[in-house]
Image (cartoon, rainbow, N blue to C red; front, side):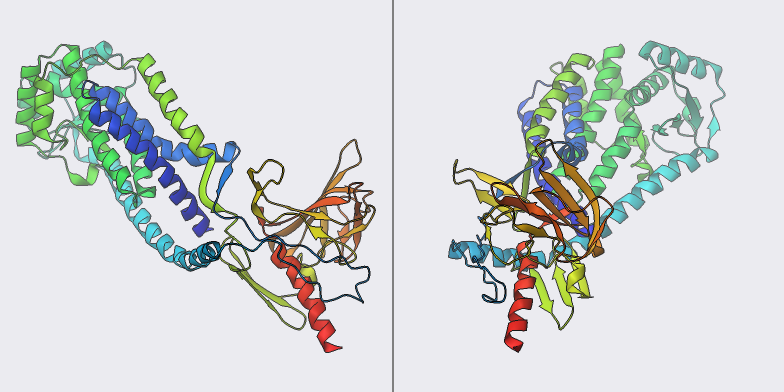
Length: 517
């Protein structure tokens, strides 16, 4: 389970890196873009790391094939007692390079658990750091007192109305010499240092305006979201670059908003420099607070404030819609592509099957399978026909369509029974959990087995079982279709896995029994 989560994160991280690099290049070369525009670009690109895996679940996923799997066939045999053991003849040998790639994948797969635990340790540390900041932001105001000056309270209310903030914002004076900051996710509090009552009204106006613009844009809440993304993808250096740049442009966006409200650039830069010199933001609250004295390259920040080239227009809805559509145009194609090698997850090289006298041990890395001393009839280990004849027409995973030449991903195998009307058998003991029959009489039957296994039989006719029936390995559940081809699929905990290694168990049993005679 943990390995699967890590694999999804790595897959999303690779896709998200492409989006982040694109946005970073736009911000780098788009010198005329305002800080607000860059901030929204960076913010949505970081949040896209959450949207990517969700959109991949909703959208239909296509796999990028790494190699074409081995193709197998079963020799036609009229009587099980005359021709055995069953042998799988390889129709198409893979290139040597393909075999080396498969072996390399197997060795690399052993390192996944170690990387998973390293990632988990870092994730926990970053989440704990963020939680300390959030908890501190709730505990911190207990050591502060509300501002008692009526003229300051009136100024706060007037600025709120001018900006368009309707929610309640409290103003507190702290007993420490800290930078003015906004704390709280839903109930916002502006906290100022202990000697703030001595400030001139110009400084009060600058500080309150800056912090109120943080409140208006819900920056504290968005900072928590960004913090969670940073914790999940802490192994990706591009995420840290984007987040650092995001915080810098966020402060620049607030600066532009203050200037656009009517404060002159020189007056604002002067007040900001003095505040930066006198006060510092406590590091413990950095994850849950926004401060006017945020360490966002002070010199560059002041130059931007004094520069007349920087756009001071507030961010509009049309620009937000444009950025969202642009990012979605990057997300949707990436979510449709599965960068992880599909079809290479499970094969004879990655699955270990040990057959004992009356039981079997099966171990596999991906998907995670580790079952021991299991009776062979309890898992889908049988050839899905009463008699051992027929042909497997395709392999599991990527296959080349002989008609079009295109690569298609197959989660099931097509079996040609060579003659219509041949009986199809349950491959293990279990219970029929689903039976669907269309208007033409074709059926799809799903049998649930032990240990999370299930077998699915499609395109069969004249079903012999009903939903809820218990079946034993070898019981007839239906018959082959008119074109004598049906589909067979095995899943483990809902994830499709290669049926051929399991079918191979039955051939080894036959071979062993024959050798004893």
